[in-house]
Image (cartoon, rainbow, N blue to C red; front, side, top):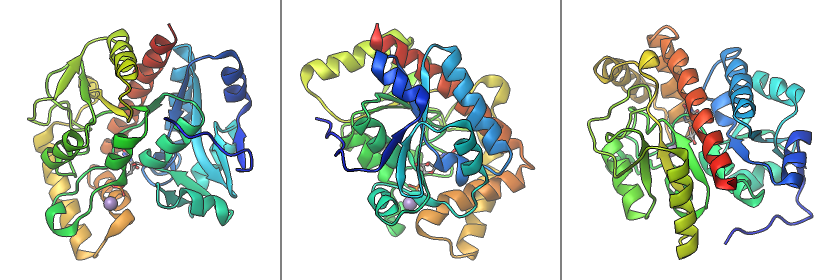
Length: 308
Ligand code: PSU
Ligand code: MN
């Protein structure tokens, strides 16, 4: 069961999201770490705006989630979105530090885990992002496993992503999801996708081919009283993909340089994404934006199907 938000919590809904909640319209949550830590300015604001526009086009309402000066925002006004995209010192906020950012009146961008918590508390059932965090390569040594996986196990939100980034150990990431009972459904394909590439070489645990089928699956989980989230993996469009073989060269170089620079903890994912952006001369960013847009469209379709 989703816990309600205390009336004492500093929370603010955008005008659009408040109105959508009033009339029971479909809403799609969006994370903000991807804006502040995942992409450079101004590509990040262009992505954030176009993703919101796509969700509206599909008949749903976007709710970008972030903590601004200690207030939890469910949906950002255009000026707030622009200002967040230009913020260089936002915290990267996950389950461990969401309450910290609010208590200490900080500005923080929410990861997949923290966005799921906020979305669930606000009654939002669907969330679109790029890629989830997972088990890092060498995770058996470093124990670096994203809090996103645990959150998927416990919080009842449908997360639409383009798979797990190939910078991770994808087989171990899938194993953890299976252990924790998280359904992993690939949309329209039988192979689990690898973010920049359509294929990871690994079979997807489950496959569904329409938003209606995904909505129906979720309704059946609800009927059974199974809580927790579900992961929808939506392969990047063919025209935008970078083949896995080519990505692997950049990934290995980025991982080497992370080791040399002794990057650890929550800095690892942003560091690797930034290094890969440089190594691909921005091509990884183009793909990243295209796949988030693709995910936003599917998430909106699922949110609409859930209200039918
Ligand atoms: N995918 C992207 N860009 C990102 C992330 C994922 O394309 O910036 C972020 C998400 O917010 C995800 C986080 O929740 O990285 C995972 O970080 P960590 O591995 O530290 O849990
Ligand atoms: Mn980590």
